[in-house]
Length: 434
Image 1 (cartoon, rainbow, N blue to C red):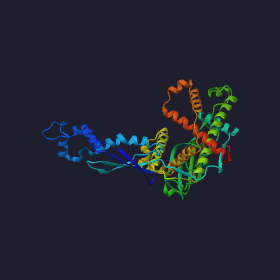
Image 2 (cartoon, rainbow, N blue to C red):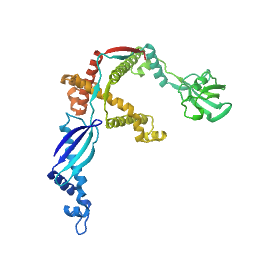
Image 3 (spheres, rainbow, N blue to C red):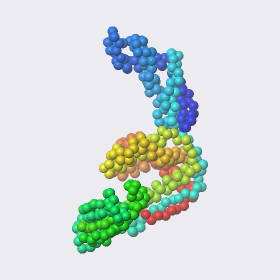
Image 4 (cartoon, helix red, strand yellow):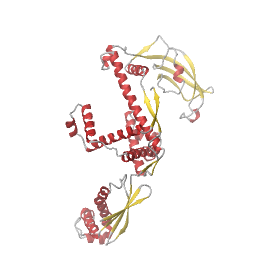
């Protein structure tokens, strides 16, 4: 067997693989041995028919397809391994037979490969740097949200309805004085502030007392699902029957201990520390994305569809997990949208193309700047991970597979790259207090 590699269009390479008569005949004989039990000829026991008889009976090319598959399976992976420094396959090849005879067999494989990316500039650029901070108000809100989550329901009779209350109401919606379909309900439980209803409705119920009837004027959003209601004004006549409020637990030492702290002060400090970790992580992620986004404005790459398709699958998988946590099946979601899995996958095309380009830029810059991860850095990272799960480094290392080690090495390189890019570009701080 010998092969030739040619660069083709749209980030593909063309492999022309030529097999000798001996290799071809050997593959046909192997295909015959594996498949002869499928065929029957009068006068022979099934599985015992000689090859030449089967070829006369069913045609000379009876085992050609299976023989070609055997040769492909045997040699294609080895070719990719041999050429790994020259190109990286990113999808299945398109196969065709260029020649087939007693003298030789020529198989063509058009392989989508990882493209090179041309980068216009990656130093000396003005790049937004995001810095998120945590205020006392952020800490207070987080604590209040936790208290609200742990609150107990209690019936309220001595005050008007407030945001976060659940109210039991009747309502009738009218447009131009006429009731419209879907605008009427009795004994409906609505949590104020949940944004279940159109903007203005829940706010209009706030302040109502038990037994009160009030007209609430609203305007349907321009993107409302019912075509006949888009952008239209309506009046809902609302009668309030019952108010259920939230009895928040007291913010005291007992509450703090339930939350794993010795005192309210220690609990507040713990909340602030968590929020600051989240803010630091958000700052880092958005700044790194900002860096690559700016560099990508002057970058070009001919990205094969195979790479976009693969990224689309990742995106759909993430969506499926998110839906699953909400108790929704992906198939039901797609049915609701009146679309198919194949069609919906392509809604991710633009985002996936951008994601792949960013990945290619990162890989290219690591290579251009000769960024490496030392063995000491890798060992330190392993020790750090081992400590986080309460194990000794050597014990933890025995449980790791090669992919984990590759990920650690890659993570170190990427971190070094972004440190380099921050140091070699003009980072303009965009401070946010959120």
